[in-house]
Image 1 (cartoon, rainbow, N blue to C red):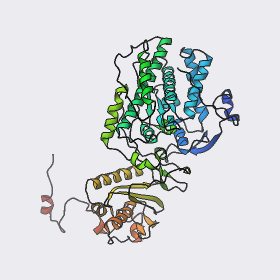
Image 2 (image 1 turned 30 degrees about the vertical axis):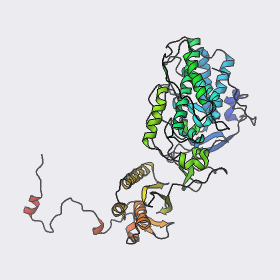
Image 3 (image 1 turned 90 degrees about the vertical axis):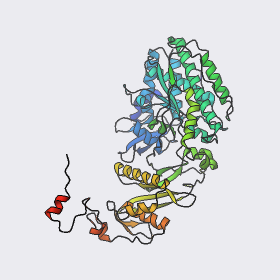
Length: 531
């Protein structure tokens, strides 16, 4: 592995509390002197919170990721949690002779700590949780390698790839022929480079990144083969990387890495580079998309300090600045297919399909002063009310004619099952609207539906009561988009939990229209023989 000089951390107070006595051996390492903040965080809004200690420069999202990664339900301290896998890896590396001596072991551990603290890379959950049956993986966060001048730090990235290969080889006992090394948030990297995901330039950068990853990984596998013995031949034919990219030096670095791999006498591994579906580790690193998946948009939902659902710019949007709306607009599926075709030749396994998953709402950190003022959506509206004491946020996205094509409802107090059902229903409504089904059909179907929460509506100057969240939402949409004023508020008794409504409002209990005084002969005619 090439020598890498990692930046020095400024010395502050040491971790010397009684709880950290077991970590006294970390004095003089990158952990020494890093001030920690102690917060309470939960993996998701429905889970109990736990105490989390992490660097002061990190925010609530990283704290929530640590709460999800750490096993159990007790307090989580990042240095202690990380050293539970870093130190054993170094010790096992010495035993396997992958790390030659104490000096090399010390450089190895400091390199892993530096990758984690800079949020450039980390192993998957199997190593964090020390799961013997899990498949170890290592992920590198691409936007973290953006250089201050707007380029990509190819040298540091190649060194991180080599370090990850060595860590995975140790974690598998130097026996695995296949390793799982991948990268995350290509979309965020392209946004930082001011490149559109669906552009030819974006695909060239993606292919060059994948080629650099493969070349650096196979070159490290060759160095391990020199020490441990070769098990696999070097590939005689390899795909050619892009001849040029908009990023200075990236194409040359990819070509040099592949040439270095081709010059090895043999390899230790048959396959090394494979992308994985994202989990809490990507969230810990600050990656907002998995692998080569496109960005979900320029904004994300979160909870503000008062518990309301808010929409904030993503990290990728902050990098893209004024061009965020253009660069981070969800691309068509064909753009992902084109990116996959450009990158797949350099991978050892097919990439996973992109999954659009809404991130759980988190308390919002104060926005930085340099954050651009981004519109919530290209066009649309947002209403915030409480229905029966439960906070509700209704959001619409409009087409150029001002008609809704997407509707979303966010609830902050309900259980996960209720929110999931509501999300699924509103996605179905949005799909139907986009397909041309009129909004009036949904208003007729859902206005005055009865289920909790129900009752007084606060925050809406027109609608004062509702029999359900859907009742308020669709009557609101009817007024705003259809101009309907024929949907008055229900009576207070209709909003009570035990209200059953008038007979005219209730659906028939049987599928047949029975006569008022059915005779035995009439009832026999309505029977059907089955079986």
